[in-house]
Image (tube, rainbow, N blue to C red; front, top):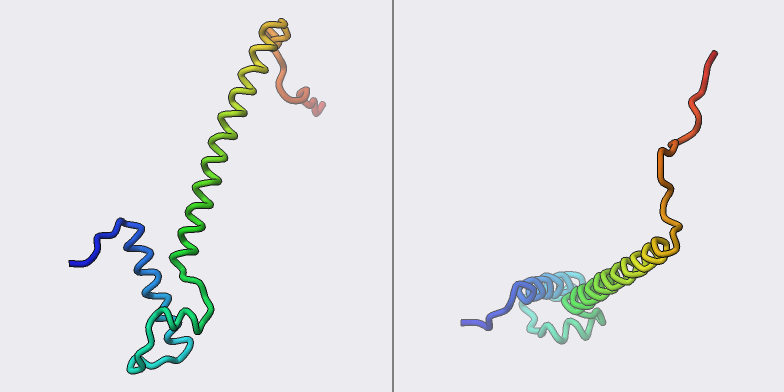
Amino acid sequence: MGVKLGPQGYLCAWIDAFDTHALHKILRIPYTCYITNVQVRAMSGCPSRSNMVTERRLGFCGCTSHAVLLMKTLTVQLLLQFARLHQTGNDLQEGPTTRGSEPFNWI
């Protein structure tokens, strides 16, 4: 029985297998010629696609965590500004307000 991989491990293994097969075709290496995948990578000079997927996933995770932290910071800042406005008495206007421009009279 093979090594157990998580869901990302299966995906990365499948991507690497497809990429190596494509490199064999691009480099016109026949299936009868015994060349390892490492040698094919060295001949092509291309990095493995699973490494690219992992880097992009980590980058996305970093961006989302940064966005969450930014939203928390902005929320705290807005709450503090609202508290300052409320303490000074410069709250929003009370009473009816008009929205938009005045109605246009055609006649």
